[in-house]
Length: 436
Figure 1: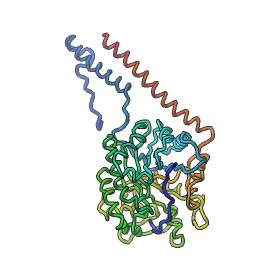
Figure 2: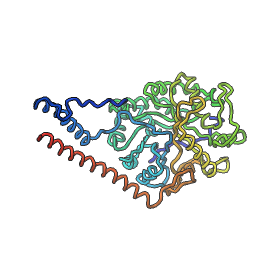
Figure 3: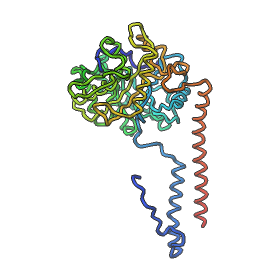
């Protein structure tokens, strides 16, 4: 059973080698040896280098010490509450064809982890809400989960992040609030025991429901009743360097109050914008205002240096009659302008030097999602891999899936062949050097 994020309820908030050293040749130059002994000593250095290079090729490094959890500024949420979407192998081909490198899923399905092997794509996996209490009960449970869903796949599958729960704080199930804190701590301790804490980022995404107010952005604070749970989470994330992840939906803010919110402000289209009366900062789009509201809440709580990232954002292409603004035209406009804005790698009015990073919701329209009609129409792509609307992607053509998957396999095989040939050639050179 695939466990995914809960149905999004409309938020009543309105805004929601560092230098090139000169080569030192010395006695290694031909004709510079003063005796056979000197020549023999001089020959030892190149032989050692050859052996060292041979070892590097024969035993490749498993990867960087610290993984890049988010490359660039653009990522995608790959939800799978559907019975008609492409297989994970075809999804990998679609993502590579679309040059989307950052992917977030809502579970740890092994078919997905297998499909992502050797793809080079960054993958964030999840401990869903249904497992939070298990993870909180015992640290051994978290290690067991990590040994089953993470360890066997590294480094071939680039698992760079783990989310613990989704929109727990502020959600309807208050029995999860305290276990969430313990679950996050236990998973982090498990990562440490497996020496993965520097390779895998740990976080929990929050909805706008954790904020008491978000307008104007500078006035945003966390709800007082949540601080008993939020503070220990923020303390841990501050200590380990994890960002604060928020699900930011101008679409939901707009449909909650379409009479008073300018849709152009929500869609990144030309509009007068707003000026925050406390900071005099001007906002020409709601997305930036929602992010700066999260920054303001963190600052008010004493976490001035924590980065804010967006775990989900998107716009529905269709919905129920009472869901104003849910249309293909608006979805295309929002996602096109958002993509353009993210690719500029710029910050917000409050934090201009910190580029905004966001995971788009979602990759596909998911036909089995419960809730309002909009829940089934957030996808950039239809179930068959064709684009839902044009924002610059080409989609998955029937013939391109198998060829793309095959090309991945060829790249892997070619890499191994090159390494073997290099090893053989170096071995020959070493033999010749030793024989002279």
